[in-house]
Length: 211
Ligand code: AP5
Image (cartoon, rainbow, N blue to C red; front, side, top):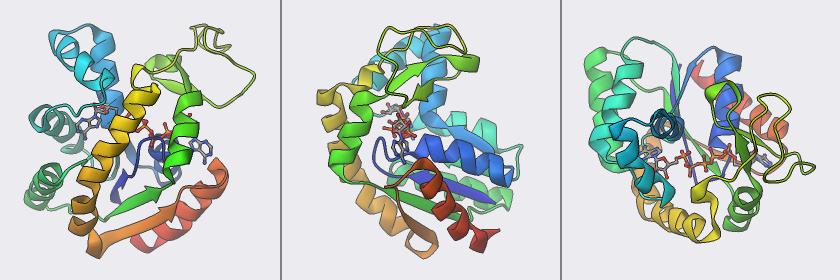
């Protein structure tokens, strides 16, 4: 199965992509994660994209398309998380997959209201477990506490300030209408409210039709 997860910031794309890709045995490819890893590597490219990511803007299609293509060309089953994010990326992906003879099975649109986006993102903490940005919803941890697993300090993502969250939401609304239209014939809309387990179960059931 080859699918993409899209939806507003904080809708749970990453959280659900981790669980669903494991369940169905798909490669999980998160463009947000790829950007953050590039930044953490200290490379020239990372330096260039740091400012873009931290301000909530989008990295150029050229960079993101290339990164995704490198990862999907050798795998047959994958779950894209946060990509495509605009119409040119969606068209680029479809063209590439058509040439490869492995079309996208469909797109999962996870929806939550703006108040929930703000509630989740203003309390999100991340560390660097296993070299990945990991998050915790455990309210007993505060910014500056140490992660018991990786011993790194929990911090907030720079793009999780209220001002940047609002900007990301605005950008999402500007771009998303066209994405929904583009995928209308292979779209699954999922309510992202409820516990993580409840949302996973909802997505899993729906995805059985593409299995
Ligand atoms: P990215 O990391 O993809 O940011 P995003 O789309 O804004 O999504 P988030 O990571 O904030 O949220 P999410 O939906 O994954 O939710 P999560 O599971 O974390 O991208 C970051 C940046 O990279 C972009 O701004 C851009 O600069 C660049 N970029 C990325 N892709 C790009 C592209 N295609 N083109 C160009 N640039 C690109 O959950 C959020 C919080 O809620 C967590 O704390 C989680 O634990 C919690 N949570 C999850 N589910 C639940 C639940 N059911 N109940 C309660 N809490 C929950």
